Length: 282
Image 1: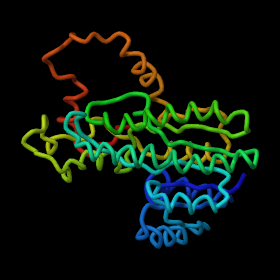
Image 2: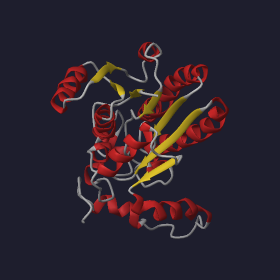
Image 3: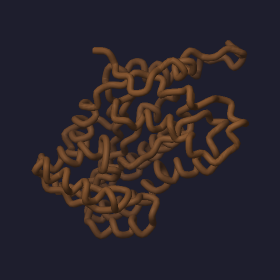
Image 4: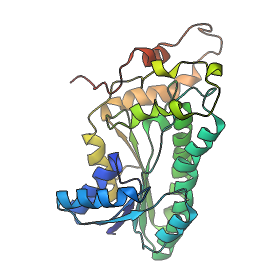
């Protein structure tokens, strides 16, 4: 399998994975959301001296998804996504819908058509770029995290459903990495169409609550998973957060609903104390 489609390839993880897969000799279709990104990505590929086929593909656009069915995709990397920050009781409904359309509904609709082509071919690989937030959750990331929890459910079910047809399914679960994505997520409130006086929190005072890692481990892992060089179904980075992630998955079983009522959780307070783009100290 050599022809790979990567959605959301204009920035971040998708951008670097597209470049590295092309360097490995894969036939890469690098998909970007808007036409304005097409020439920029072509120029960047030329500067890296790699051969990329750049296509405009908005996963929420039915016409774009239909167009992708003509590309004979052998490996699909579902990387396109957006992040909506804010309290679950403040984020406007329209923003919640947009979060799920971009992160869940659009990618799944794209995958449905391509997966059936893979079934007819008798082989294929589908990589879902999920998140550590698909396994855990933090204050002010609940809506984004919900979309990634949905991806986890879809991917795990899909892995079972496509196994007999020879289709590989895997997830990549990045933690807090310094690509700009997490900090942008905490700026979306500025465009909400709501009554700001009714909000529970002043979002001008909040930031992403954790220090962030250098993204190199995700670049390497995502590239390797897409290339078929990794056997594991779930691939979390950084690996230093694996045990914390597993413990937080189990934590709700012991949580008491009345315990600490009337107090602010330390992990919520962290959003008031953290500065944007704070790197993890080596």
